[in-house]
Image (cartoon, rainbow, N blue to C red; front, side):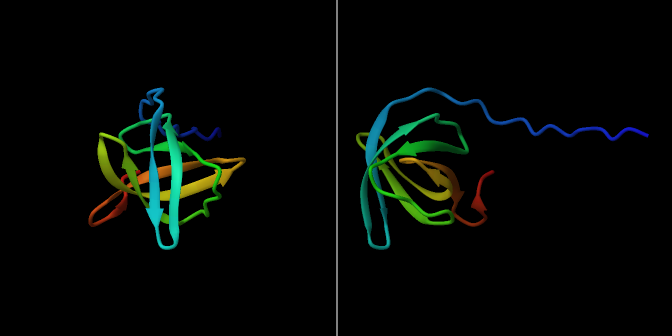
Length: 90
């Protein structure tokens, strides 16, 4: 008997280059956003982020959104956008 593989389709991502800030408890970091989707994005920063950290991303001339850090390595981090009631969208 063979087992079927389940593939989870990732949301479509868009190459962007947006500057902003990540704000949180004891944090005020300059960031650049890339790989943007409806569920999250990648950020680049000289500052380090911790998995599970909650931040508010403020994008210059665009607005703000809450996010949770899912991974962080080598000056980059992946974040998912947080819904007001139920945590990460993804």
